[in-house]
Image 1 (tube, one colour):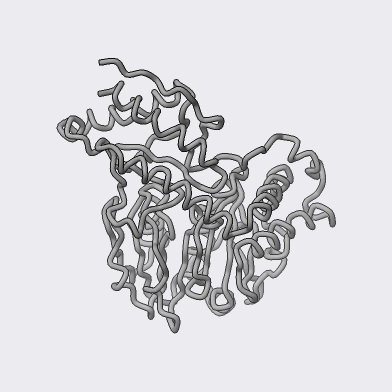
Image 2: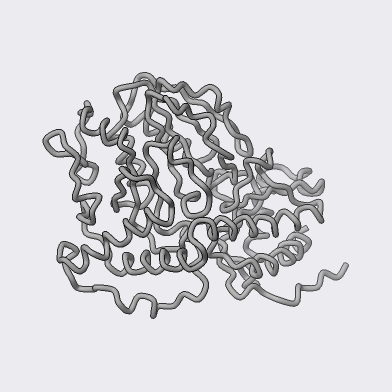
Length: 383
């Protein structure tokens, strides 16, 4: 049976969940003002670093009293800094429902390791029983499951009068979803996610409660230099004012500023959230019209608007064995790439077979509209 190709290709076929698509209209000229060949300690470059901090705080609506710093090694570095520096005084509840939250659980239970850890888990597509989280204990969790497409719908499960710290990996949620800052104590993300910045740099936000923990708690293990945020029992304030722990790329800094200026131009956080929700709606409308795919997220309330993850549910596909299912999924993603319709749409390596499509604010809605018929075409080709 004939399977004609769709008439139009996306103008930008970049749908990777990290590094993510550059903002609309981006070109290398956006980096012309980068202070290359300069010391990041000099006044002008340091001012650029501070600008990333102040603009990020403003766009995200971060409360007064929070510190925000630029740290090495992307979101992973930011999360590890928090875990190794803050954990220990209390028991820890780790909520895990996808690959990265499982990585943090592994670090806490096997690498630190901490003796009093409870792992509250859910399989891909689900979300843990949040009511099990104990406000007397520290909690470590992701806001959005980048590899599963399952996100928190709110932070109502976190007690306002909690004794423990709420440590949140928000790398695929920041600048795309509303974060309940009053319920959080540590928030991390990376430049290469929702605003499409260049990779390698992370952001670490600390509430006053987190700062108090840093200044009162000395970890029982050695801390590498790039993790150290205190000196003589006091917070090193310079880290949160543009004095980075290690040498940053001023080219990446300029790109981060460009992304933040673009975010301001589309209405700040409200505009960014609206764009991501509109992108999810396009995919949801398409899913509703066909029977081959469904959302991996079991509950629509927890459906990600950024790392939108689909599973194949067609009878011809579910009849295949596990290896054949994985191979089929890869073939569909490869076809999309070969046709220039969609790049990097394969699921995360540990996730169930299907597709993962980034729907963050830097992705134009029209490009998603054009992608969906190509998914239908590629699936029929493989079938």
